[in-house]
Amino acid sequence: MHSSTRNYITVHNFDPQDYDRLDRNVDCSSDYFFEHIVPHKGEWGRNNYMEMDDFEYDERNQELTFTCLTKWFPPVSWLTAASSTEFFENKLLTMATVTRDETYVEAVALLDRDVLQERELLSLEPETVGALYENDEVDELDELIWTPINNFITECKELYLVPPEVV
Image (cartoon, rainbow, N blue to C red; front, top):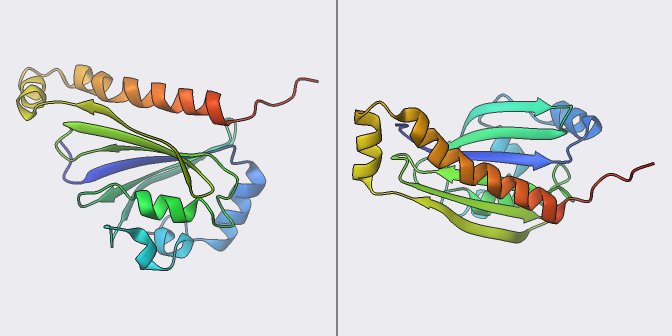
């Protein structure tokens, strides 16, 4: 189990020029990344601190993915504000949040400050999660968590991304 709520954020259709501009203007490896993107903490909602856990750019799939840790709540307000910045405007953003005890998973999709989808993906009893750990069934727990997350992202991409034109 993790000691923080984990938030997995993906920026879709993030081409190499987008990444280059972001990388030139923002320290992407620092926790200050979040403050640089949305400098007014009043727009962060219930979160006043977020910690960068992982950051990577997949040029082939044109996706920027980063994981941030929060104390309790998903940074939906921060993500909403970030979605209208010069770095992420006109981009589909998806975020899956897994609570620290891995009993609850929710997801949200945004585009230019508009929440397109927001839904609960998984809710488990703490005893169920404890039993999976106790019985060394961590892979089964991962599947319970990640299958609905991957399905949510796939659905959002199909609904909100314009497919490239076939020449």
